[in-house]
Image 1: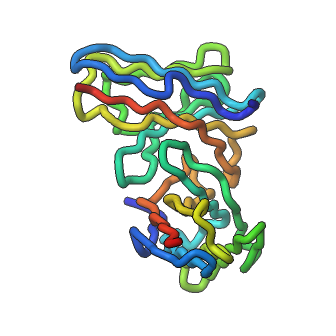
Image 2: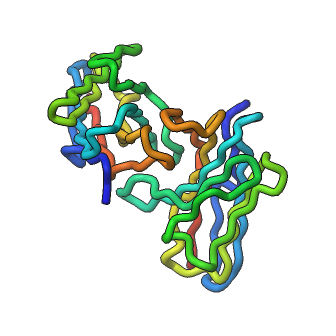
Amino acid sequence: DTGVSQNPRHKITKRGQNVTFRCDPISEHNRLYWYRQTLGQGPEFLTYFQNEAQLEKSRLLSDRFSAERPKGSFSTLEIQRTEQGDSAMYLCASSPTGVTNEKLFFGSGTQLSVL
Amino acid sequence: GESVGLHLPTLSVQEGDNSIINCAYSNSASDYFIWYKQESGKGPQFIIDIRSNMDKRQGQRVTVLLNKTVKHLSLQIAATQPGDSAVYFCADGGNTPLVFGKGTRLSVIA
């Protein structure tokens, strides 16, 4: 399977705990995106990388959220001190070159439930 | 605010009928649009795209129409099947990052 891979698929955690998600983009895709999606809503942009550089962060991304893409390949999204409002599907997507007018390829997401 | 928006949150269609999902956009300079399909528990999946130098583009059982005059696009699904049941999103591909609306949930009645 050469698509975008996300792990874990599901994560249940207690409020206040830290969680980390991983995304492996399509090989050689330069750009990697993180989105968040809650029930009944469309995906909301969080942040994106061009290779290892984080180019933009949404104001939705509070200080408790941090994303990395250290070698320009896989990426991690960490949420510290989770809150119930963090419960959502976290989606990763990648695109080949990052130019405008280019479609994104999405993974199946990580479903986070904060109890 | 949103740069693209679906007209109806839900759509129910009889199996075998054609489905039409509509979307409006606000940026007259937008020149690339993408339709995604999202099935339950999965990420959005690319269906079809269209650039502004075209009015119509056809895929397998799907057609996208673009009306730049009224800033409207539609996704038509021919002979709708149960497997078409999903949420459909239009996105303005001229933006980085892509901005999604709330989507339209298509339910196929057997």
